[in-house]
Structure formats: C-alpha cells, structure tokens
Length: 333
Image 1 (cartoon, rainbow, N blue to C red):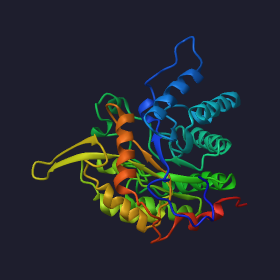
Image 2 (cartoon, rainbow, N blue to C red; image 1 turned 90 degrees about the vertical axis):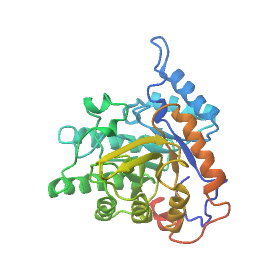
Image 3 (cartoon, helix red, strand yellow; image 1 turned 120 degrees about the vertical axis):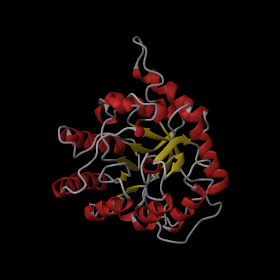
Image 4 (spheres, one colour; image 1 turned 60 degrees about the vertical axis):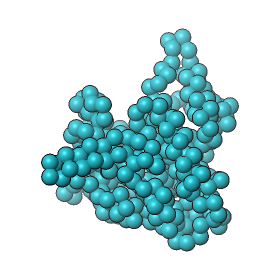
C-alpha cells in the first residue's frame, strides 16, 4: 500500500491489518541442521493459518538490516509462498541517540529502510526505546520495573534525535517510504506533547507518528489519559501499533496494576480511539500486537474485533486524509 493520490478511503473490508511478528520472535528457533528459511516458512505459515493476509516484519523476529542479499531474497520468497503481504516493518530497541551504540543503530536503521524498499514495504517504524535491562528481563512484565529514561531536559539529546531521525526520514522519503516514530515510555517519544513536538521539529512529510498508546498506559505510575494521547497524536499518525491493557488504580494507596488483554476488554476504548483517528484523517496500516500467552491468537481476535465491529463499513471522508496529505512522498526527489 504505497501512499498515492488515490482519493479512495479505506473501509473495514480492505483496511490493512498486520500481524506483528513479535509473538514469534523466539518461538521456533532454527534446528542446528536446518536453514533459516525453514523457520521463516514455519512461522509465516502460522500467521497465515491465523487468518492474516498482511504482516508487520517486527525485527525481534529477524534482524532485517543485517540480512545478506541472498537471505533477504529468500525471505521475500517465503513471504510470497505463504501469500502474506509485508505492509510494515517495525525496528525496535535500537535508539539512534544511544550513548554507546547510537552510530551503530543509525547505520542499522538505514540498512533496514533499504531492505523495506527492496520488498516494497510502505512504512518503517522506529523508536527511541533501549534494550531491556537484566532486571526488566527477569520480570513477568518488563514495564513493572524501571528501565532507561531519556534525558528529557537535555537540549543536546533532543537536537541529536531531530538530526538523526530527520536523516532517516529523508532516506525513507528518497526511496518512497514513510517513517513512523513509535510512542514509547520514558523516551523523547514518551508523552503526546513531546512526540508531537519532535515530529514537528523534524519537519518532513515522510515522517509521522506511530501512536502506540498501550506503551504509555501500561506504566505503574500516573499516566496521560488515553483519549488525550489519541487526540494529540492522531493528526500526525502514519502507522499504528494497537494493543490494550487492564489498569487498576488505588490513588490513596499509591497502587497501580496493569496486564495485557484484548483490544475490546482493556482500559483504552478502541471504538472511540478509531473514531478519533478517522476524524484526524488516518489512513495507515494498523499492526495488532499482544504480550503474553498465545499472542498470535489474541492478535487475530483483535483483528476480527476491528474489522467486524469498529472500522467503518463505508468510506470515511471527514478530517485530513493522510492519503491526500502525504502523496508527495511517492517519487519525491
């Protein structure tokens, strides 16, 4: 789904809803005597069997920017053989402002954009979140313990983020893709105000936001209301990770508890959030995610919920359409 001048608006029947490869990251490691292609085919067949026709190539599953040309070609053939269309690529936990590995992560992001372009993937999502700490990896839910925090008042870090993400945005623009910046806790993309300001400072049509509201709502601390996050960020959205959490609060006791759940059962009202997105003109890929348990099956449940009960059955024309807004990305010099 390239961004074009086509005025057609998406409906429930044709909206691209991609399965994240996140639940399959370590589910089926390759046997010592097998090729990576065998594992790729096995995992992708599970996604197809779950009823998906589109997939998000989450790079916790495969490090796409590190694939040799032959392996990249083999992965493309594996996708074709299962009938899955890669409509997005999410590169995670490789912050370009990391104090030790920022240069390395920047180079990896450039290679990932080139890989996406080679497969005709229309949008690449990146963020500023870091690798999980040992303490986070030891928890059932990693967000329940403190991880890295970006220096929010550091002008030098902000300037570096703008410069490097703008560089990636120009690269994406040059090869006809969109770059999406993922909201993520305790980073420069960790609040709606900061995320909007960052994308405004970058100032490229090809760069927008991935309003992953769940990343902020799950924190065991005071958080922005999901509606406020959606209202602020959806006018800048060009891709969207969706997941949900239960959230229980006892302010007097200072108690907060969150847990992953399906889109329709969590604290974020996705029926209302989709309406906010439509009013803002969102016409991008939706990627369904879930942590814990059978994440692929929950993702399929979330897809069915969106397609059968939430997304519009007829074209939605109110608001600012990203299809019209961003058509210059295609073929822009």
